[in-house]
Amino acid sequence: MLNLSDYERNIVDQAKTILMHHLAKPGVCLESPEAVRRYLELEIAGEQNECFCVLFLDAKHRVLTFKRLFQGSISSASVYTRVIVQEALQCNAAAMICAHNHPSGDPEPSQDDRVVTDRVRDALKLIDVRLLDHFVIGHGKYASFAERGLL
Image (tube, rainbow, N blue to C red):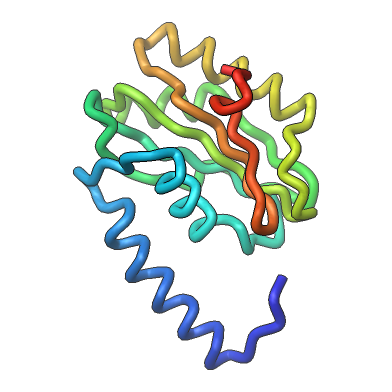
C-alpha cells in the first residue's frame, strides 16, 4: 500500500471516481479484457483485505452494475454462490465477470480460488448466466482464469 498524504489520497480518489464513471457506467461495453482489468484494478487493487466483486453484464456484455459482494481478511474472503446467483437474477444479467484481490500482491490463483470459480460457473449455468472470466488482482499484476483456460 502506498504511503500517501491526505491531499494525495484525495486526488487519487477524485481521479478514480472520474475514471470509474467513464469505464463502468451502466450501458457501457468494456470492449476488451484489458479494459476490464484496468477498471477492476481501480476498484480493488489497493484494498487491505480480500474483496470479491462482480461485474454484471447484459447479453451484449454492456455493464449493468458492479457490486462488491464479499469482504474478507488479509488472506481470504468467504464467497457464497447463492448470493451471487440471487444478484445475477435480480439485475437480469446474461453474463458476469468475477474478480477479487490478493492483498499480498501475488495474483496467482489458489486452489480455493479455482474451486470457488468452478462452483460459481456451474451454478450460473443453471440459470443461463455465463461466467466470462475471473480476475485475481495483485500489485501491478493480475491473473485471468479465461486467459489461462481455467473456465
